[in-house]
Each structure stands twice: as structure tokens, then as C-alpha cells.
Image 1: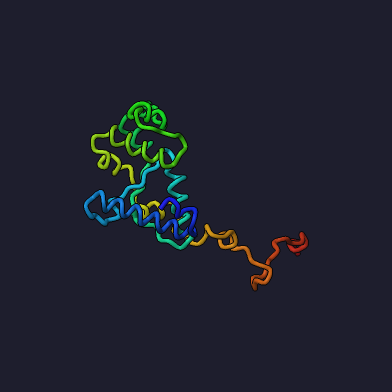
Image 2: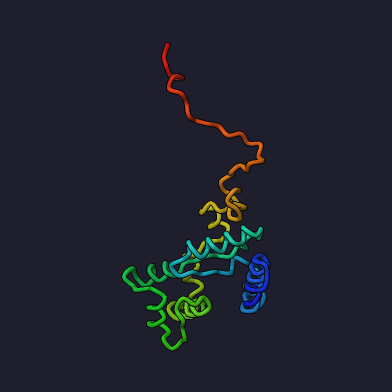
Amino acid sequence: MFWTAFAAEPARAIKDFIAWIDSMHQTNTRGDQDPNNIMLAAHNRACHHHIWLIRMMLKYGIDPPNYRLTDTLVLFKAIKGKETHASLSTLWNRYAPWVEHVARDADSDAFVLSYVTRIAFEDAKLSCYPFGISCGEFTNRTGMNMFPHSYSSLPLLLRVPFEDSDVMSMSYETDEGDFDSD
């Protein structure tokens, strides 16, 4: 799976990523195949990382699975208190300093986030659920469902006519004489 990202087309890497998530979920839940029971978490970056992931899927014609998306920073602030220092490094130092962590390393961050969340909350799954949203609903609320091909090329997004286009340009400039009264 790791080398797929470097060796294959992006669409293939994304499909392998989805297959890997599904496989891990089925393995860890004794065969559960319901995508609504899979939650992808980001820490203080939900609107960045989740949007980036969905845009990449749409760009390559892949329908995003209806996983649940959540932001664990919101979870920590809401349950542990607004005054809680909840940066990932702070949470790591507080809840799991014995776990190796390399800041800004995706694999390490994901592992620590999962570990810290499970330690900090008695039932992490139940705690995360209210702070999650289905991928379909997230896509609708952010408007990403409106232009499924808009992320693959600028002309599709802006509908910029090409030179050989049969779209005629219009000028909105007028001569002041057009508004003279009789």
C-alpha cells in the first residue's frame, strides 16, 4: 500500500487507500462492511485534510465512500474543556509520552492521535461519533458535490472559453451617448 503512492497513478493509489481502510475495518470488527462505521479523524485540520482527500477522489472520478469524518480537536475542547491545551504534541506529552512520535510525520501523527484518543476517552468511538459527519453530508455542506470535475482543471472550474470555442464574447462597455435623453 505504501509504495503504491509512489509507483502508481494517483487514482490507483486512492483506490488502494480506500481498499486498505475497508480491509482494516473489516479485520478489526470481525467483518463489518458498513462504511458509516468507519471514521476518519483529523486534529484541527478537518476542513483542510478532509476537503483535500475528497477533492482528490473527485478529481480522479472516484466517488468518496460514505465514511464519517471528525475533528478530534473539537472533541477534546468540547469534552475536556475549552481551556484545555490540545495541540497534538501537548496531548501526546500528557497521555502517551512513552509512545515514539515524530511531529509532522503523517504515520506517526495518525498513530499518536489514535492512541491518545483511546486513552483520553473511555469509549473513544462513542465520544467521537457526535463530532463526526458523514462524508456525503460533508460534501453537500461544503458544496463539493456541485462541481464534481471542478478540481481537475481550471477551465472547467471557470468555464473559460478556448480560442476555438463557439462562445461569443460580449463587451459591457457602452458609449455615454447611449444614455442621452431626447
